Length: 511
Image (cartoon, rainbow, N blue to C red):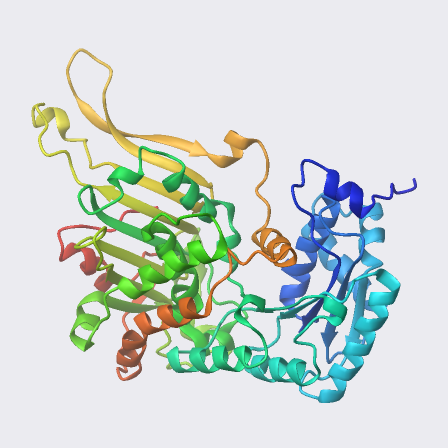
């Protein structure tokens, strides 16, 4: 069956697609890696299936492994079919894969970039990519500065013939404040800030973006979204898996760098930020930076009181016995790397003065769960008898990012019957049943925004440095301490983490 050809003009006239990307070529450094197979190509394939890619689009994978164009395409299709229960559309793949190419080369050598520039010029002629370039750094972070420098030296920090050039930086963005500043300075030596897209896939999740919709599209929440009504906020990023084959990486990173510095701090910003004047990149990102500047910095004494780390040991998850972190592959048997972090943070501004934000992230938890829980103050007075309100708890608004994406509001309601008993119940909104459609993958949204030139959901330079500056005292204190508490796999972290909110008369909620 012949595939219907759709012109770029028809795409732009489709009212379902308010804006279509310009033609362009995306170069993926480290294209033989896992991210390309699992996330980038599936996201681009889905955009092609939805007719959101321009016909004049190309993907160029670059890595040291020798491979032909066809071998690269076959490898990507095999990986795509492994992920898709429903298979892969032959028509979509045939059209999409014609724009996939591969170059073997060492990203450290200048000659690789000369060859790449020549090849991209050929694509401009053959596929009409119009000199627009996107460089996606999916390689080892240690190569980021070299790749940026080589691109600049080869003159590829600008598009050809008036086209654009954009560069995407995957996390981790530095290892600490100093390295983040050095990396920012190195990139900005060759690329302007408007060309730089620091990616955190959490910002592409529909439920993370819905934090903004929930707050700023509903008049009932914003008036009470402050210290007068909110008792405290809890943010949990829990995984039930261990480090698996990422032991070597985790020994270098740990949970603080892997999850807290990026994912968790971004969610904190969206929860605590002021309403932006408009939903555009600079307005949204400026308000997020203000939150990071307002977070109270910790001295050594405060780190002892408000920061807890832990490491999982052998235990049980979902009825299966699992090894401890020190037993994992490529992990030092005496490692003090944290797989769990809990922090008590304060945002010292007018809106949040005195409201604690309890945040935690960890591996080998009892379940996978990412949620934001905003607990409000208890009602100042209830006229009902004490016996009738034993099951009544303070109101809590929970935004579930994953799994079971949705929103839940805990309220007090009368129990049916002749007496007057008030008990807490949940009002739930499940996105899956409310909208009857599957949420797109985070990379799908972010890659489309990249092609459209919309950096709203990407991270600005001062955001990365602001997050690192908050965590720098914690990292320094922990690096000087040789002790780390342990927690059995399948539990919610070490006992010291429970003490963090308990000292304030509060407690962790169970997602």
